[in-house]
Amino acid sequence: MTEHGGKPFLYVVVCAAGIAVDVGKLITAAQEREWEVGVIATPLAADGFFDTAAVEAQTGRPIRSAWRRPGDPRPFPAPDAVVVAPATFNTVNKWAAGIADTLALGTLCEAAGLGVPVAALPCVSDALAAHSAYQDSLIRLRGMGVRFGYPYSGAEGEEGAGEEFGWEEGLDLLG
Image 1 (cartoon, rainbow, N blue to C red):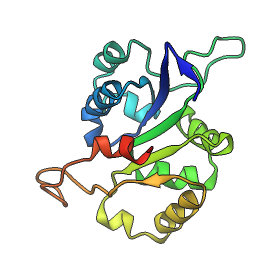
Image 2: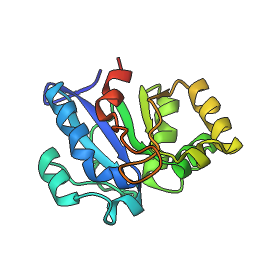
Image 3: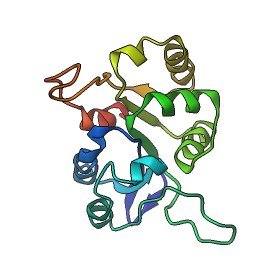
């Protein structure tokens, strides 16, 4: 593992789903397990799906959602592992297809090529999870070594009500 400040470095990739509001739970759990954390969000997720100021205060680092310019320093060290949470239908399918049109997707595509351990916690409705493209994407990503947590399909008042999103499961899947 590469280390930063004596601790391994975890990238948390956050996608635009309502449950993203609680991403601080994953960050807290990671920090309790002695990880340094940097957050990369899809552009939509960074635009109101979670409290970016609180997350930046919690990690002590800026949230990244856009590519850096040539010559700009790398704001994070290379990752020792990545957790994608919540992992949406759109992100899972684009990632599996090798589409890197955002920093979040580019980071996920690159992680596979670097052999970085990746865990994903899906947040996909039952209807979208049944889509054949999504099922094919899961097969492809599992073949690349991505470890998937239990699928989450909704919060109170939605389909799947009563389920708890398994933030810490992402860390457990990393081993």
